[in-house]
Image (tube, rainbow, N blue to C red; front, side):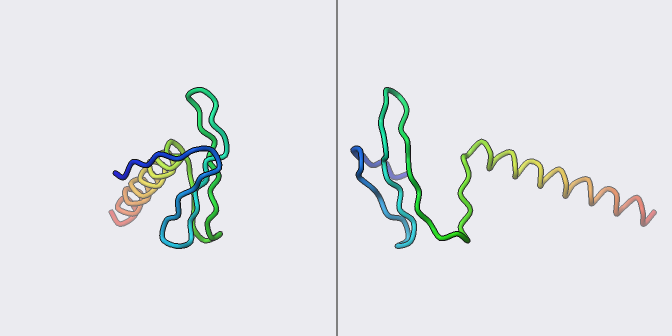
Amino acid sequence: MLALSRKKNEAIVINNNIEITVLDIRGDQIKLGISAPKDIPIYRKEVYIQIQNENRQATDTAGIDALKKLL
């Protein structure tokens, strides 16, 4: 993991096409702005994990149903 210090209105650039800017700092919260191409999905980590879990469950269920149909 790369750890960087940034102040308000400072940014970092990832892969020449993603820019993350510190918009505001209040206490223990930081507001970030992310500029990226529309074809790059951006999720909060807890939402990303939920999507992955739901996809895994759907795949597991679909596989079991397909096996039942074969039998």
